[in-house]
Length: 257
Image (cartoon, rainbow, N blue to C red; front, side, top):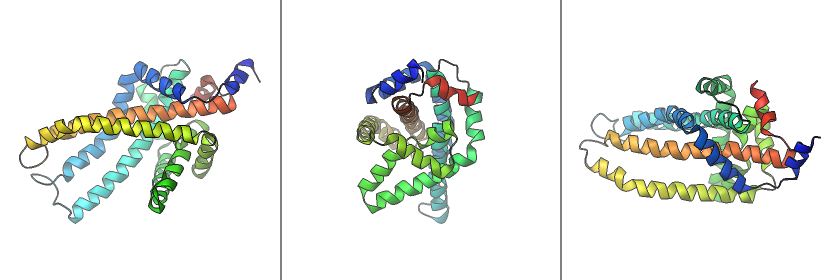
């Protein structure tokens, strides 16, 4: 084992480092990451616009409404996982000092499209069912599986093995990770509350349905929060592997060569 690897193993796991790396990466690649997030969020925002009651919208709570609602949720989950995959690529390339390109990032999503869809469906049903049992099991499972997408993208594990690998990496640090999730959700709620008067205002000024501006503002908010969370998960994965296994960013990036 090299001295660099030993130093990486010896360094303790740090949530502060995760947060610091997240915003450092975003600062260097904000336009790329934001553009990718817009592509991921547009389909569900469009469906939400189609579903609105009133002029041009679907009949409220009709069969078409529910079909579109279910499809919208499914599309949202799938696109979120695909975005997490491409931002994992972008984050790893950045941490290794290499340049991430838009085309190469999309190539990652295309190459892993079907495994990632399987990952998204299993994760959603698993966490959703755990939440139905009571809130705590859902939170525990969500924390254990939080780096499942980076695991699949970087390590190429089989779909079911991906979840056990994520649980292995997060073991021993789940309370810290859970605390980070709580802080993120609080910030997301605060941002939503600050933006709500604007959303309500543009809706009230529009007759016959919700104003298109509403969906634009809502989409921008979702894009910001999604970019931060997906980049944060990628940085969390790197921090876990660095602290537990002494893996450096060059070793992670080598899988894309």
